[in-house]
Length: 197
Image (cartoon, rainbow, N blue to C red; front, side):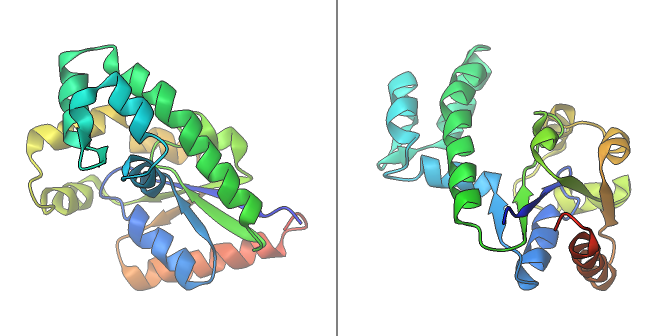
């Protein structure tokens, strides 16, 4: 049986990590793209050797220092595409391994840039988590070390929420944890009630 693939996405501060945990709490396995990158960058990770060959300054304590990569990207416009050429196939392999191991009828694939990268075509359905702009801003600015400039840069890389809403199969508002959890449970039940699950 092939697991039903639900692509989970949402802009920064919209409650994606919290919602992903709600699926885990319901026994649904979650693959996290950001966590996969952290594993690849950690000492012994598959991205360490190729990235340190591209950017020797990024090698620190046997792993890849993301701050050094960020400095390189700021200094060299071509750096990001070179990094992505190494990292994207490794992330895809990590995801494929997760799917191959999956024994659940539903899996969640937590991908921040799901729509931006066109990955929604690989999903059976997509779920966008969202919140009003003022709630998003308050959540993001409460993070340690976050600045207005950083927030603006992150938003500029992400598709506008309205466009994501238009593309998503399902939408959950994350204003209040209990209602979000109820929506997660209802969505799981809905997917299981469909003939494909």
